[in-house]
Image (tube, rainbow, N blue to C red; front, top):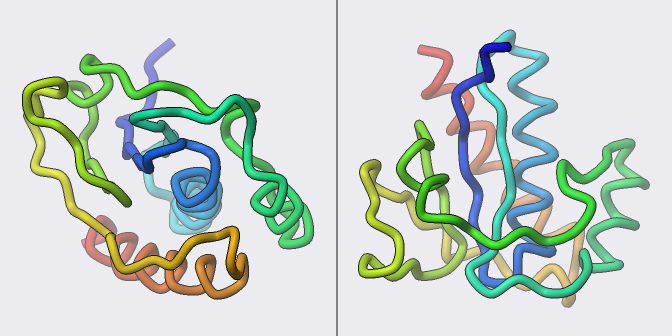
Length: 133
């Protein structure tokens, strides 16, 4: 089975921003017919997904791509076609072959899911447009 090229979304805890981004990216990519798949990872993952994130995604008609936060692995950084971070990534730990794009202006999901989601969606729409061309 040939897997799709990966777009990697990374946040510190792997339980909120990256989860929202991956879920929405996969939905938008399917709608545009892009042969890409997003995954969500954390540099210091929580034990479980953010309850506000899970609830918000369900209310939006989506599900998380992950059942629990997953630790970012160096091999995933090397294999990704595109890397989007919501936090800093150590060059020593993760030898990046693709330059990461940092989306550090997204507010905490714990403060306001809808606001964080809307900012992520705006950025995703621009990314999808770029990848579609």
